[in-house]
Length: 385
Ligand SMILES: *Cc1c(COP(=O)(O)O)cnc(C)c1O
Image (tube, rainbow, N blue to C red; front, side, top):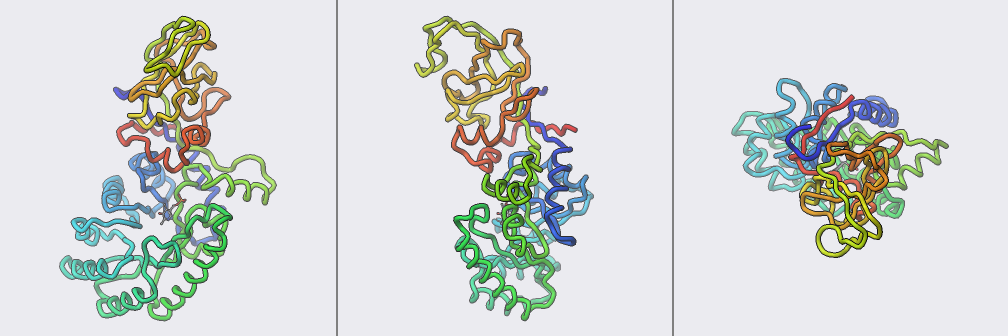
């Protein structure tokens, strides 16, 4: 291990497995955009983008200009498209345009700024028009779109419309069905208007992971895939729907991430003693405990106090007492051979057992997305086979 107290392992073979599965769900010629916002959902932009490139992925989606810069640095001499789906800092716009980074336009003011900077740097801004179809987050309304098209036509050497897109307000749940049907309708309407006005829009795109599974008719030319490439279903519902449809029992996706540390110290606690801060854990018998050097300061949620589980010596063992900033204490009475330095699995497999992100998330009341993206950037990420 390194000087860090824990490490994250990223499995190359699991990624390949997921990629194959997702590609099998996409019609031919659909561009696969790998969504790597949120530090690649906690997996680490650096290792993750490298693995994706090895597997011929050449389109990456991020939220911000800062994340785009990180991907750009990982690319080095290698060529791939980068698309910013959210915030471009004013200060970054010039860099974005000069480096041919694609970005969403969801307001007119930004379009004019982009045109001005494009004139200055002598390169067109590569944009995707984000359409407001009912999510009521970011996006151009019908009126904005008409205005934008006027400006684009007048400045057509300074702006290239690479794409037109929208995002559905919760494709992972059937409870949003009616709302999404309305979005689909508006999106189709706006796209046909756009196509009449502009002939050479390259990518129409609307689907995230849940979108490709539940609204495949909306895939268009490009799919923005986040959570599924990391081996997670957007919701349990999406998996149930897929698996009952296909009559399969095993999950075609594999988790890529594991989180591991090791035992820092071991000691015995007498019956009747409290463990750690306060008095929330009373030893009801003589116990052997292990100190494990992770805590909420490393993304291990404090709400796992007294309820979290980790794997030690091939057994599932319980957290006793509070999760501290840098430490947890686990009961290893049933693992008599455990030694200082032995592996502790926080997320992932050990022997036949597994601590899943889902169970970890359920216990700490976080969804997969939240839990993953809270894993600190500072933890080392190691690519394994
Ligand atoms: C995050 C995001 C995605 C990817 O969503 P997943 O559910 O992780 O596949 C796609 N599109 C947009 C606009 C996003 O913000």
